[in-house]
Image (cartoon, rainbow, N blue to C red):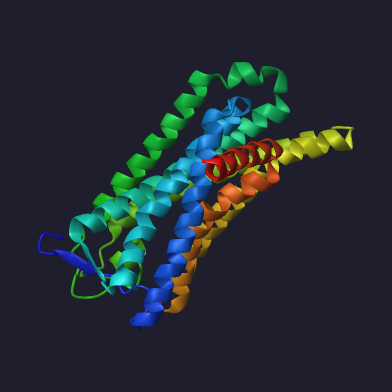
Length: 311
């Protein structure tokens, strides 16, 4: 139990003031890039009439998830580095853990839904509009958010049901479950192990679904006689496949690596990779690899530019 704990200490990147300041500036730049990129994707997907189809409907929700995820982890870290602070309140830590797990699990479910969307579009094109109706798409997104919320509640409840020592600092720049478990006074992690087992099983099901979808997709695309047709089909799939690989690779680096008793810089770098890199690169990947999105983004950037220069 954590009733007596009022705050936790987060060690962050460094205790040297100029290194803290540099870390804060770098994180601020990353936050701005990720914020602008994801917000631009959301705006373009919402207002451009050519992007009002299921693929971009799901992409809009993915960008919103990435936007929320990076806002959960980075602002507090930036403020801590600039002000040389290292504490976070108990309820702030609880909220951060819940939102981080909630958004990550929702994104995993949404990426699975997006792979199914690509499967239907390429392997069953004649039935696409019937299968991927607007109501069906909304239900899929709703289920994704619900599964993420359930996972967030489960992990948060099991983590903070353990006795935690606030006197020991967490060697991380945000409240991360593996680091919080190291602060526990107990070795009985049965509840959290059960939660991890459930989440891992669901994630494995999502992974298998994504893999099977792309096996069918690639087998179908390779049967297209026209190289132009193959290129067009691949252009709609490659961005999503790259995003999935990036997300799963980052998660695997964070949670499948051997645990270290002694804190190291590599722990922080891995955490930065899986919390910062996917939300920052996803808009760039979709803007560069998807012709329709690239054209729409360039169009709206020109509108914004001319609006600023003539205004």
